[in-house]
Length: 387
Image (cartoon, rainbow, N blue to C red):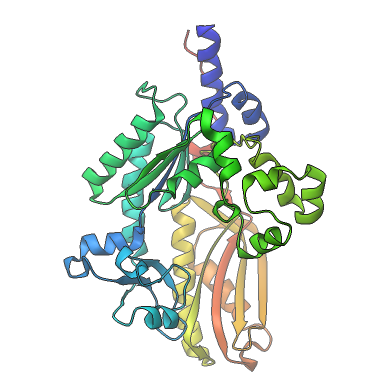
């Protein structure tokens, strides 16, 4: 049995490199009580700014644009006390918190810290699924340090993050990704919540649907109209009824409340597209100014392309006018490329094709798709099983 378990574990780890979800699901079923951790950095962008700039410590700050069309990317907990939240307009943020300080984002700094944090994750397990710079799932059912308790691992990770980055993280621990993510939000900031297997079903039945990850205000409103307020209410509906009312998400809801959502932690994700865009504080109609902005956006998107170690074959420019009319223009090449000179020439051609300047522009974006890896290390390798 021990040899079988070892082979099963090796297979489970190796299948990650192929991102084969079908096979992963079959192997995952052999671990009926997986140990999943969700780590979520608390007010990440704002916390990095407060750490690096002592003048911001203890103050209400927002990372983002302060202009008329600015948006809050992240808010410190001091700002959140006034109701400021991410994705809120800067105008509304100022209304809620007149003394708020807006700080320009430094994404390279955030990415560097994120890499430090991921190194900590990988010291415990290779099964790490990043969701963004500031959060990730970890499968520690089998881990590098042979620690039997996922809760202890989560505590150790949080302590290491604090020691090495001087930032705080919250964590959720449970039997699947859905519950782990819900758990990580319960005791924020700087908290850890465990939902053990024996309590998982009762927990999800008592959980308010507004706390379900993936249920937004619109869906919640529809559920309230159907007298669905908790997981137990949701559980009373058949799979067919949920699909009829909510489409594909209905099947997801049906499985979630029955703990049947055993999606594996996928450590390698394929990039479908890479993009960068900018919304202007004031509408732009000058061709020279637009060209300079396009140059900056193309350069940012290209940096992201190279950081992902991929090349592109299809280049797209997105244009949104002051009246919110939106158009996209694309060009596909016969080859893959990551050359700035080649890519910028194409984005310039796409931008000024036809009558682009017939109206003032409020947003400009550049995206790359049909991506191909340029890193030989990403190629699948033959499995080697030590005996």
